[in-house]
Length: 185
Image (tube, rainbow, N blue to C red; front, side, top):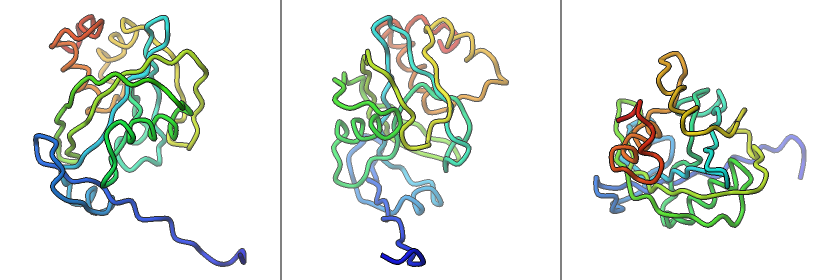
């Protein structure tokens, strides 16, 4: 292949859903973002054997919530992709995690003026190393839930709103040790 030939990136086609999460169509990612269409997504909370949670900062180049902190790996589901497959793909792409056992944590609806999604939520325990594989993550660290809770109380610490909503749901529902996130209750 010649060096001066530009090969366009493949177009990402995203699953569009209704408020219950049922797939109702598809659209290119750029259209989903531009028109704030309700779409399917995944979110995976990564814990270590000591029950700490992995918190990372998103790249400033991300098309949504650039540079903000997050406690979930994930992203949009492509059309025809199963939630578990999407979650596994996102874990591998963002954190270099392959072969993790996923535990379902239900679905969460998130809507604001920039994004609207039904997230298929999971948790995994990962004892190995993490690596920021694709440039979407620029920093990360393991935190106790108490440390994360302290950060979430700080209005100057930018944190992605969909994961904040997910953690709020888990805290309110008393799911596992997420109930200890008192700043969200």
